[in-house]
Image (cartoon, rainbow over all chains, first blue to last red; front, top):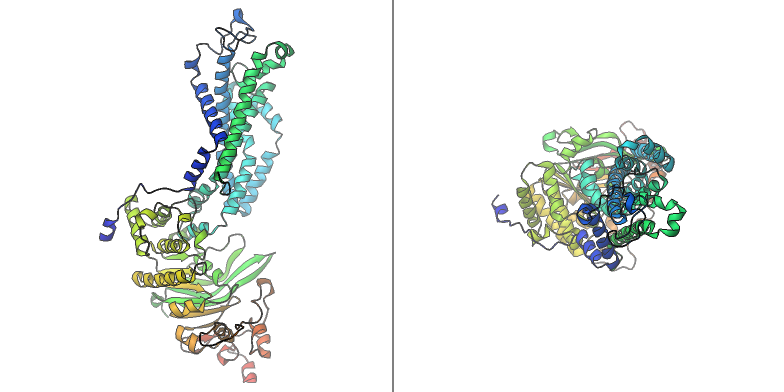
Length: 297
Length: 339
């Protein structure tokens, strides 16, 4: 082994991985970077809410109902006297938690099912894809409403589980088709030809190549999940009404009086939702662009 | 022949593809053997079943429709055909390894060269990570890559085609296999690089002491590398002999035609020699008779009526053609008739 001893391991060689190229492109994409900054700030404020505001989001204050924005209450109060600014931040915490956790769960399920079906093909593929079709054909809203009412006591976790279980189908199909086209590449056969097990070939060789698709799917799903939470809560079937969330805040706007006279109750959560979704979509587009070898940016 | 002096013995191999419910044989009744440290070339046009044959040996046929129907693939006396995926994985990359045609796609674009080299050692050895990486770097040096310690951290797209093929060779020889299958390893490369790669394979073959099964359609490569040659046509072996006799006394009309298709340096001509027609496709394979008959300049009536067998005319020289009486089945009265 004398020859091997001379071999020095160079750790700091200049890396030109597809990842670093994409990172550089993303860095130069202004819109995506502004959006990312916005999302990071929102997320930080959401999880540091207790240190930013002195109010308790659950405290009902009869004395200060329906106050206009002004001193003491930056964005005024709602019909129960709760501070809107405080609700907005605690609501962000709920909405973003649901969004992030549900997206993570969905991507996990979709990746496992999609890559298994795509790689093995044959009857495995048929069984998994028919199961996917089956889940896809559940009437989403009805199912969520029924499950959410059954598991009411479980709080936001019931909603997260229900959303995850019902939303993975589209992403699984995308992953499957991408894996199917990727496995035809010769490097997959080469990886098998050096004694790689199917699990290892999928994990180490195919998934890194499919990762860009998965990341883009995840960003778009994050937006979808936040919207789903909002919509369901607005309808009264999402987050329990005691828990602050952007959707629950919008529920107040069902009262025509509020819409007409108390803009500070519904415009802040509305804008928060809009800008968050918009920024997530810009980030998704940015990532898609960054991984596209044909885009010059 | 005992299993001692044969490394790989393929016996009556039939590999079929299931197309629209019918099984079509891309490899039909192929037998040949490879001795340790021997370079055997498999020659033939595109579509002759050369690649399918090599994939059968590695058990890498497309799962959904490719299948070994009949026959044995004896590697050191052990039949590979019925082995499970798990048993096969222990052999792939360790005892038998493979180099592919297209170095551009045979390396994973998102993993570093080093990682892909390490992987084969991780699969088959138990040495430490640090040690594996050292081995990888010295393997790269062995295949003639300078700056090996930097290349391990680079990605395939940063290397040229020739370098990538060198990396593929490094991966293939990492565990010092007994048999290397090279499926047209130089087809995708420049002519100058081709020569270097062939030279490298030859050099490594001597260093490691492995046998090489080289699949090619380039007779120049055969002349350079081979000890023995197997000529395939339409899924069958039509001639098998050593390299000298192939070039100096070819027997089968197909082999002769192949040799005549090579342009010669001392001959001035406008149109190159070709073999008229094409290899019959899998679905249009003739049911009976010699498969080369439609393109054969020496075709006879008997060629359409019965199947020639691979018969040994001289020691170590076998041919499948009715021009030689050894190709008639033993119990045939046609033999006398034609003679």
